[in-house]
Image (cartoon, rainbow, N blue to C red; front, side, top):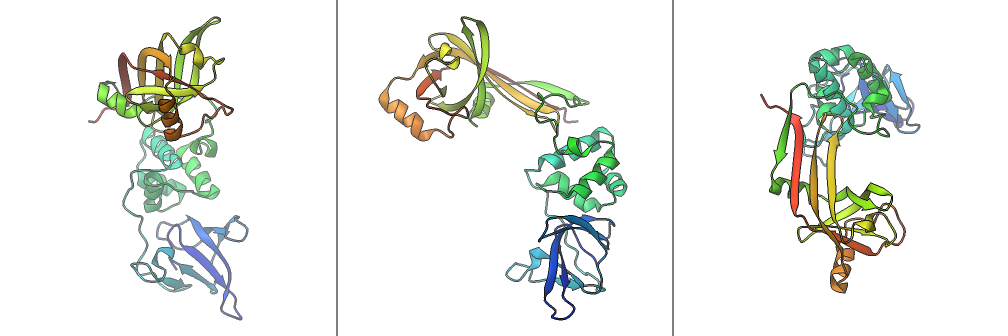
Amino acid sequence: MRAQLGDQLVIESPTTGSARRDGEIVGLRHADGTPPYDVRWSDTHDVTLVFPGPDARIRHLEHEPGSAHGSSVQHAGEEDVSLRMPEEPGPNPGDIGRRVAAVRERQGLSRHETARRAAMAPDYLAYLEERPADPSLATLIRLASALGTSVAALRGGGVDRPPGQGHALLHPELRELGPDECRALLSTHGVGRVAVSTPDGPAVVPVNYEVTDDAIVYRTTPDSVPAAAVGAEVAFEVDHVDEAMSQGWSVLLVGPARVVTEPDVVRRLAAQAHTEPWAGGKREMWVSIRPKRLTGRRIRPIHR
């Protein structure tokens, strides 16, 4: 019997031949896919170590009838002639996989060596690092032990702390961004910070923003700190820190802020907004900041 991560282990009733219990194989103990397996049971969602008996069979879900490959069901004692291999690397790996890759590379470990230490298939480690995945607790425990870190660190346990506490890159590059790159990063929308002067001194507050007609716009209330930007030249900053990869970027916009008063423009802004203000409440005052100066920087590894 051989399996790959994501296959189903099905335990059949010895009397009727019908499925008695099934679960997803979420952990391998041997690189060749032989038992035992870590199985997440569908009825309890618990993960247990299983040594399959003669009443067990492997179901390769991606080969079920109706797929391009037909069905593939393997019973205990049979030899699997077509092991399932991970798909080609995708462009959007999961955060856990990126953290695993970052720790592994900082320690100078190859995938093969890390997989050997964690008692898992190198192909599955590649899958974890390159695609969104939800590894079992047992898998994370073995990976954390192999990498000399903690499960909490691999899961991003520091998300409530300020970003930037990870290790710096070994060979970082700080690059100035051009205006077009800055506009492209701003246009993704999201949360930015506006810096204003108030009677109590300078203040920097986060706001949900939109980009329209090359200007930054956000909703607020007349008595709020973000409303103090109106009539003054202010700074608006957006950034992204990739804690797992120790890289990121920031864009700074400086320009005059004004209240948007044209009814048609206000209606259009409200209709096209990508999200409601996270702070909640009734926020119908739109503030626009048109850039006079736009700069940005990016930190990333030097490509050698």
